[in-house]
Image 1 (cartoon, protein in one colour):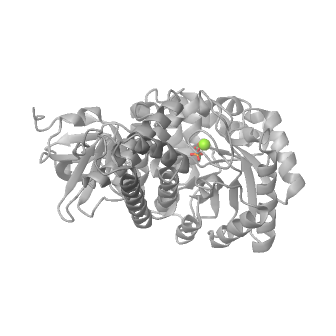
Image 2 (image 1 turned 180 degrees about the horizontal axis):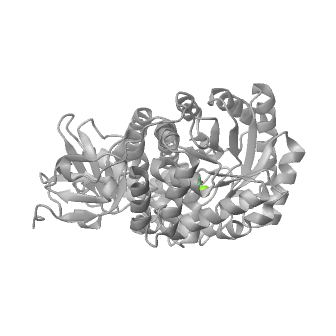
Image 3 (image 1 turned 180 degrees about the vertical axis):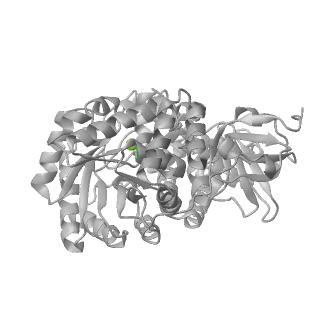
Length: 540
Ligand code: PEP
Ligand code: MG
C-alpha cells in the first residue's frame, strides 16, 4: 500500500540540507543456492574456493581504494577475516566430506558464528563474516551482489542500513538516503555526513515507501515527507562566519596517515583525537617500538598545525586488535577494553608511549596523550604518572563512563585535560549499545540526559582548571557544536570532512550568543525540543 502524499515519516536527520528525489528501494540480494554435495571432488572445490576468496579480497581492495581513509581500514579488517587460515581449514574438512566449496565455506562460517554467538560485540563480527560468506558463495554461484545504481538521476536510497561495501558503491545519482535502522553514529550517518548527502536514519516507517515514490528528505526536520517539495523543507541554518576565528578551537579526528593528510587540507587547529588502534585492526603480530615510531612520525608530520591529541590503544569491544589476545568475554563493551588493557598488556601501552615520545622528538610536534575508557580517578592518576614518566606530553583522559563524568571535579591536579567521547558516554549513560541499530533515538546527542551531563562536566572542568574537549561524533554536527561552545566546552574535534563547516558555525556566533543557545537547549525536556530550541536561537 502506498503512503498518502503529504505523509511525514519521523526519523533522525543527518545533515543541514534537504533533497527531493525518487525512492530507490535497495532490494534484498538474490538467494544463494541450497548447500549441496560436490560433483567435482575435494581438490577442484578447494581451488574454486581459493579463487572465490581471492576475487572477494580483490573486491574489498577496490572498494577500500575507492572509499579511502578510515573506511579503507575497515575493508582491510574485513579482508583479514576473509582470509583467516583457521576458517579455511574448517572449510577444507567439509570439502573432504564431499561438500561443494560454497556449502563448505558457509558451514565453516556458521560454526565460527556459533562459537562466538550470544555476544553482542562478536555479533557485529559474525555479521561481517556472514556478509563475507555470502559474497564468497555468491562469487562461486556467479550471483551479482552489487547495488547496480545508475550514474545519473535523483535517487533517494531506502534500505535497512548500509554497510561500508554498500556506501562505497553510491553513485552521483544518490541525492538522499533513508534507513529504517541505524543511529546517528552508524556507518551510513558518518558517510552521508562526510559526503554531504542528506539522510534520515532510524525511520522505521520507510518500509512503507515504494520505488518511484517522490520524497523530500528533510534532515533538519528529522523527517521524510512523501510527495513533498523543497518548499516544505525545515529551514536549515546557513551559517555565515562573522568572526575571524571560531569561539573555540576546532580540531580534527584522524586514524590513518590519509586522514592526517585530509585534515591538513582543512582549517583544523591540530588533531583532537588520533585513534591509534585503527592502524592495528588487521595486524597479527605486535608492532615493535621502531615500527610504531615510524608510523606515528609519518602521521604527526602530516597532521594539521596545532597540538595533536593521541589516544593510547582502545582495543576491545567494537575494535578487536588481533595481536592483543583478549580472550572471550560475555559482554565486551563492559569488559576489558581501552585503558583496562594495562593489566594484561602493560608493555604494549608503555611501548606506545615510548614510540610517541620518539615520534614527538623526531617531528618537533606538540603531543598530548590520553587514555580511553577511564572509570576511576585512580586509573586517571596511574595513566598520567606513567605517561609523564615516559615523555614530555600534556596528559589527560577520555570521559566516556558515567562514573568519571560524575567525578570530573576530582581530576583537579591529576590531569592536564579531558576529552569527552560522546559516542561511548551516550552508550553507557543510556545503557544503549551504540552498535544496535534499533536504539538510534537514545543515542542522539540532543538527548537532554546527555546535554545536562556535558554541562556538568564543563562546569567541573572550569572550576578545576582543566580544559574539556569533545571528540565524539556529536562535535561533527555544526549546530550541536555551537551548543557545546555555549556549555563551556573548550574545544571540539570533528571528522576531517566536517571541520570546515563546524568552524564556520563556530565563527558565526560570539560566546554570549552560544551561551544563550546552550541555555535554551539545556532547558528542553525532549531531544526534539532541544534541537528546535537551538535552531530557533540560531535563527533569531
Ligand atoms: C567516543 O566514544 O565518543 C570516541 C570518540 O571514541 P570511539 O568512537 O573511538 O570509541
Ligand atoms: Mg569511545
